[in-house]
Image (cartoon, rainbow, N blue to C red; front, side, top):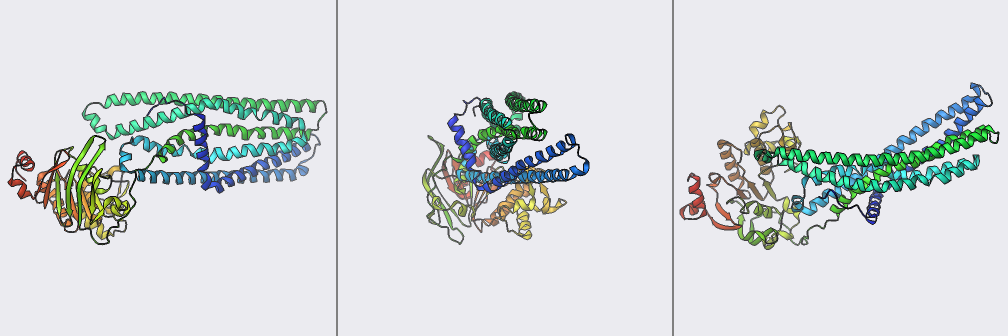
Length: 588
């Protein structure tokens, strides 16, 4: 990702701003409520200024006592309370609007990623997507909760205050009217540079997030190759560059605030000097002069606030560029669902002439012909990089073949609704994911309505019950992200229990016995053999002894199935399996 990309064209900026405003339509009621409450608070400023002017005028010029001022004091106290209520209501409604807009957008982004599929996600930097779904959406918060309401109030409140200021002193009203456009004018002038800096800063943040996230994921590999210090120095340079970019944005932001405050203060000073001279020469009464002087700062306050929130708009536009790019990414074409899986158990899954490649000209699988039958345990072996995991992805429906087809009881897999197919398959990957939550919650990802007895049975079958029951809270024990608190073998057994818990028609196990001791691995092998009586099982293995009693073995090399048969048949003839067995020591 380029960190020094050219600035965003004005047309693109306006388009993104229009898109952000369009996203506010579902929460328009809350936004209108926030603006209405803020407008009420602005009108109450008029009553507050009049009450305060009457009190000061009565005490200073007419020498009234406390008894005469009490009614106005009580009125002033009531206005304070009403303004506080209006302010709280405006903030809460604005927060509700922002939360609603972000929640809707977050759901759309997750749905879009699901539609794009794992192939798209794997091709993106994990850190960039994470930053987009977290920091990117958070950048929109101030836009909806502060900028949009303040933009409306900046038009309403000054106009309302001006309507009350003109009858009291039309000259001061003219000064306000003439000076008010200067604030948004200079806000736009200064904001042009800040907008470009914000866009560049967001790109730099996304790039840095992606890099740091990828470094964390590969930290073990970096340490093995003694490259962790080099990456640490690179991250240090990136962080320093980002720090400089943040300071550049802050400099422009402070300059913008200085300009806004300068013109607002200058205008208020002009009004104060003019009113002061007129009071001194007796050309104006104290009450209207003091009243207008109290209104003057409040007249410019919404304009200054909009100038401050203008930076929220720029940050939102910078983040929206990436959000819109993701939402507008075309999803891969999917055939219209034409087939429906039978309610009964799937009997067979057949692959005929299947080819697949990740990049043009780099075919990973060539002419795969394979049949998986219910009640059969098929082992898939072969050298690393031979296409075993790719074949599993095709069977799981995470990718579609470029040639040939996958037939499920006579129905082309590409014509089956992915949700229906995902409900029929279970998968144990090489690196299973354990989420933050209890052990029971992690297991129930496979079967949300599973009973406690079913959880225990699956854990017992996978060899996980022993360590789960030793934990203080058993199945209610909380785990950290990625199974923090468990060993590698325990994580694998827990993931296997989750896969076995699902009532699947196809079970795919990628190195099911990895990180397990010999006794546990043997127990897992027996459990998988028992499960094979209920469904079709495909076991991807490197340890030949773990599949020595499989019903059938497939040898995959160079993207092709080079051998197939029972273990006894393959042992009896020279070939890839016999050679691997000899190299392994003949124990299998």
